[in-house]
Image (cartoon, rainbow, N blue to C red):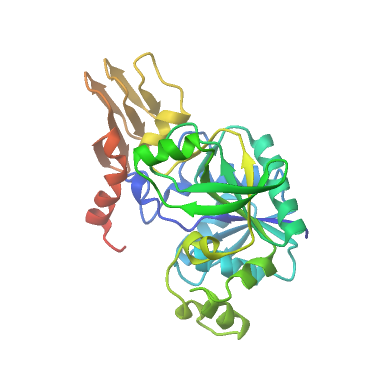
Length: 330
């Protein structure tokens, strides 16, 4: 197989409580669409990949198999994207020429444009032997995303990555946008050998060694770490493919206000809801719930599985605190 799409579907979606829960995380929910986020992501991947592999934690493996027609690779334990993607590269190293790795919780406005960008990223990974990331053109000075600083252009729309920068404050985000920085969408392409080699000298090198030695518990050799922090930020040969399709990370409730059509008062509804003189709200429910919002503004009201969340839209990031209070380490 030439290009294999690796869909990351092991997260818990803590900031989308109550739609997301330990039993049913957000990737299994039909948020801002008729099909689940995972189904939509797999369908998107099938447009460009020769095969699709879904990478998930053990507790969700059967749910994935019931939902999509794709191979399932079960990571030994959840330790963030770094160990997960290294494990996938090791498992697929003998049968995949190139891996395109994408999260299962993104909104993409045009799947055809995405497929073309994925093909370009895979081609760049093969031609350079480096690590490739997609850089989204920022539409606003967002503080919830990391940014990529483009460096030397190597071809049209492809640059070396000069630096990765963490989530900035509003003033810094505006400056980054004006200087041509790109959002780091967390969508990557590489050959398995390129990623495994890039782990040398990093926090993930012991995991690569453990996998190569056939250890029965390889994840005991590493800490939980993101692929950005564990490998990408320190790697020398990293490239950016500039993409311009509409994109959003459906990680927080306020994202729905950006991807759904609003009524005349700026309120969006995902599910069963009544809005009376409500301005700038996000109202979201499952099929068996209903919410009504009257004369309020800039709120998120979400009802799923008998649980209700009410939070100012600007505080959407704090929903993670609710998850921690309700579920703890579950």
